[in-house]
Amino acid sequence: MIKVSYLQQAILVVAFTLTGLAGCLPKSQHLTLAQQTQKMNEFVATGGYASDENHRIKSTREIWLHDSVLLDTTLVMPEDSGMYPVIIYLPGLGEDANAGAIWRQQWAQAGYAVFTVQPMAVATALKGLDALPEQANLNKEEENNDLSRLQNLRYSDLHYVGRAYFSNAELIKRLAHLAFAVQELKQRAQQSTSVYAALDLNNLVIAGYELGARTATALLEQNPAITIPTTLSAIKPKATVLLSPVVDLAAGDVSHRFQKLSSPILTITGPSDTDDYGVSIPELRTAIWEYAPSGNKYLLTLEDAEHTLFSGSRFEARHSNEQPKGTRPPGPDGAEPPGLTGLQSMHVNIGVSAGSGPMGFGNMAPPGMNPRHANAATDHAYKTLAIIRSVTTAFLDSLVKAKTNAKQWLNASDFQLWSGKRAELKIK
Image 1: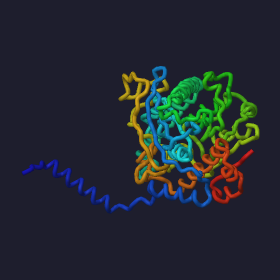
Image 2: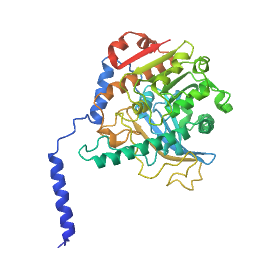
Image 3: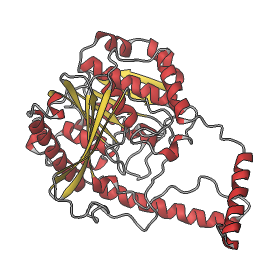
Image 4: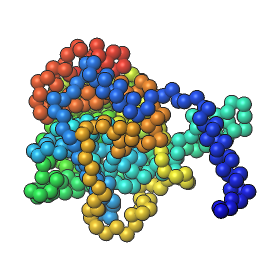
């Protein structure tokens, strides 16, 4: 006979009571991840762009080592044999190499090899800055005051992190890491038995979100004040996708800086695209499109999209970090992430997986999308994400693969009829 203490009995009673209460609580009216995914695909089918390619995809994740810095990398690409144009995707601050899953997996299904690289220090930069409750108990003034103080501290820390990681000094470091990654890709692509052998590096696209978009913009600008490694300065991308780009006013007059950007560029932002770091404002994010010369320059403006929605890592626009609570996060030169101390090997394979398409995740959150967010999605976000997904894929197919139907879709008035008042696409 199993003996149960009074404490254990009490715990069981409380557990059953809470379980019973939970069953009585009203269910969330938010759409689930599976419902959002289905609705996004259905919305695309009503007039959005869908590639005529529909590949099964596979992914590989590895940790690389460069100058004693750990680099988190992923490669998502079609399973079919062949050569595929390469998209180098650069995530935002606090995101790992699984970020941007909604974009990356869609592009891979459309026939692109999408390589993502992110320094681990950047991926863990927001450690300890958990999002605070959105609403407080209005009947308790003291709790409201405490929450207000915590919010002020969090904003202060976010601005501190932003100033550190968006600086030119950190940009130069990221460019060096990117140069190493590009050189490594070239060497691996020459090995016939490597998964990287399918990478067509002569057809290269650079894409980035937020901090990653700043790095991508630096490659385009070739600012003499920023040291661009030779490996990167020789790159001539077929196109560039800038999601929520950062424009640094301290670098000089924006009306002249972007006049030499002759390559195709797609800029994606919106009037609500305000970051938590205080490094840029929505009005500045369109400057690249406004001042770059005409010729395959696209500006997609999303009316209701908040900053984090452009990351393509979740269906909702609420900013939240999953790291454990702590004190002020480490700066760019902070300690090595726990669990990876002492790593000596340059390349550590984390795993390989395969799937039928970009959003075939069932009831599970896709890589880069935190399960905590999956059921807390805003019910209208799927349309915004569907628009971004359609426009980016059409932009790539039009310029990299020269697909006539993609170019026609981008230039047709049908886009505005389909997207409605949620989006505006300008072309010059």
